[in-house]
Structures are given as C-alpha cells and as structure tokens.
Length: 273
Image 1 (cartoon, rainbow, N blue to C red):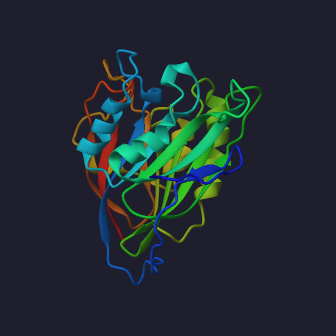
Image 2: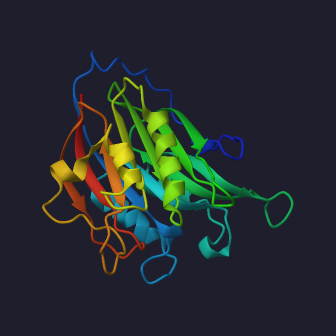
C-alpha cells in the first residue's frame, strides 16, 4: 500500500518509495532515453464533462510514459471529483511513484477530514529522491499557481523534472509567473525537463521568456502538425508544452487524441545526457 508523508499546505506530498542507490553524476552515467508526458487532466472530467478518472489512467498507461507532469489535479477537493486523492489513485492504478503540489489548500468540510487541495502532480516510473513545490507570484486575488519539482533517478542519471500551470485570465500575471519559473529553473547543472499548461501560444511573450533558455521540443520533434492541445473536441490552440535544457535531444513528439479531458496530452521521447 502507498503511504503518504504529511507536509505543509503548499509543499508537495511525496509517496514513500524503497531506498534507491544515489544517482551518479551526469558525466559518469550513460545517456538515458525516456518518454515524458504533460497532461492537464481537468480533475478527471472528460470533454463530455463526466468524471471518469479511469479514462485518464488509460491515456497515461497507453502512452508508455516514464515521467508525467499533471495539472488540475484534485486531492480530497470536493464532490466534483468524489473527494478522491487523484494523485495517489493514479499512482496506485499505474504502479508509479508520485509527488503532489497543493496550490490551493482549503479547510475540510468536517473536522478531522483531509484538507481540500488542488494543484499539480508528477508521476514517475523511476525513483523520486526529492521534491519541492514553489508558489508563483499571485497578482491581486488571482488563483494561486505553483512550480512543482521532482528529482528523479533515471538509472543512475539525476534528472530535474518540473511541471506548472500558469494563470488563464491575465497575460501580465502569466508574464510575472514565467519570469519566476525562468529564475527558478536557471543555473541548474542537471538535465532539466519543464512541462505544463502555459495558457499561451508559442509566440506569446510569456512563453518566449521560457523558450529563450529552454528548448520547445515540439519545434524540433513535432509530428509535422500544429501541435494544438486545446480544446480536446476542437483543437485550435497550442498551450501545453514540453521544454528541455541544453544537451537533451528529443524525437517523436506527439499530441494524443483523447476525450478524457478538455486538453489533449503531449508525449515526447527524450534522451538525457
């Protein structure tokens, strides 16, 4: 059975995993190829607005993803998701390690029950050696957003994997948040993969803030299409991204057709030096 460590409201929840051998340095380890996925799961509600988390699980499983960044993930949130801990449920269903970042943390409906949380999650087939959730700037009374980070041991190679979900209502807020993400990602010597729903097209200023230092893998490895991910029934915008640091090569980027959410997931095969 998966056990959960209690953390502060804005800290990620890390599922306990067997003790793993510490990753070697990137210079000493052999290159590793893995499949990554980014997916805004719309709290398990499909394009038909019906709750069916099993559909989400099947999409992730069928993608063959090794590491997954999820957005709009409920944890005991409310009746819209049957008060389920969706991150833990998906991890159990898929046999993966998981960390969770609560960007909203509300009092439970009754004393003694779990807090009602909403945020992002990372699933990994490989052991997670550490994690951290950082709140992003929140201008005015906009919804709190965050940057969830996990340190992943990929067969001896230390990989830094992050997921985020920028504001959907304000371009200026997204720009402020993108600047914060850029600064948090900068300076790492580890191979880094950043995924998420940026709520903006590739030419938007806030996206360019990130792609000046990270590679937008769709431009290099996309299947030749426009890469539209929203909305699922009539895709007309590319707002979901996989970005990588220098030295990571990518191929076979694909948008997966599915009605399990109002977004379409993006999967990419990357090779980490």
